[in-house]
Image (cartoon, rainbow, N blue to C red; front, side, top):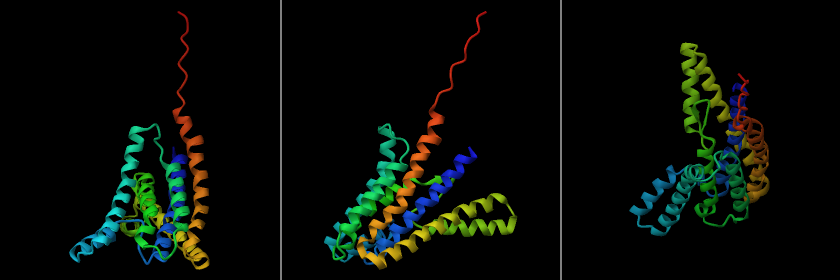
Length: 233
């Protein structure tokens, strides 16, 4: 159980690399539009409504609907299909989003260009949400920063090993997210909007983790124990 839990931590942190890559790429290549959350988008929707800029309202409402669809599908797929583990599906969706976005020219509307990201990051957020009982996003950092600071502060005050473990977990997510940011910056400086395709590389490693998870960690749990042999009286 402990081995499986530690593997999930590694898997989570590896996906944070992809989350950081996609987050930085969206900001760098699409006029500082963040493709991994909806806070700024929803604020802008209201601002455009007040300003009666209805065309931009429609573009951003569509982004909100796409993001919501990514969240909803993480509930619907396990409920109505045999697929219960969404990790590999999420990785393939991320790959498809990066591939598609790399073909969209820099001159395109920045919000529309990130439609694939809105869907993929929402799906990833809900697919890789909780490890060791800690809810940690792999696609943005605000809560991870809060949890890191509060956990380490609590440890300094109480010397509680659980607080230290929590701080290390959330701090690791922050670290790997920003490793992805560094990779994204370097790729964008070299290839421009086509740098999205470089984001597929860490996902290939994540795919290996996903296959290992299903074949070596989950299958033994699905194997039923043999029925006991009754001895004759």
